[in-house]
Image (tube, rainbow, N blue to C red; front, side):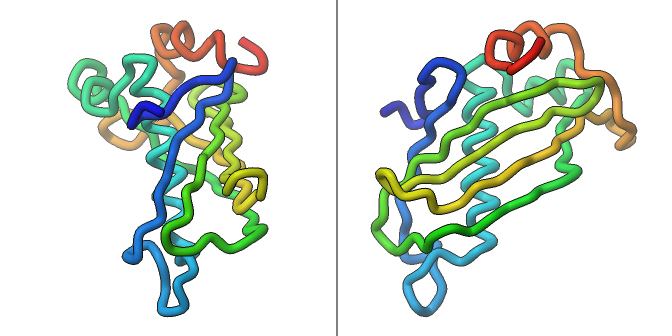
Length: 144
């Protein structure tokens, strides 16, 4: 699998290897680290489409911010586990992006998350997503 992951239809699959530094004293992944893994998967999804955070900022003075995270921990992951994060960008509504993510160890669901991101300007003001973003994400959304 590519370091940025791969697409299977509209779902992006991103590999994560669990290192000792990702765990707490008991060898179980520390709960906050899943937010980092999920962020990497969302960014890798966009990178595979040719959208980078640096270019979004440099060329359009736009960025994404996370407005809401609903996360459910289902099963622990441990050191040396190999996980795969499944990411779908579901809806693009004005400034908001609604994203679904699930983390699996083989067939076992580890974490499930619903993310609401927003496109913002340099001053932090929400702004409608630009046309190029709509065009690139369009084929992957539940509804365009």
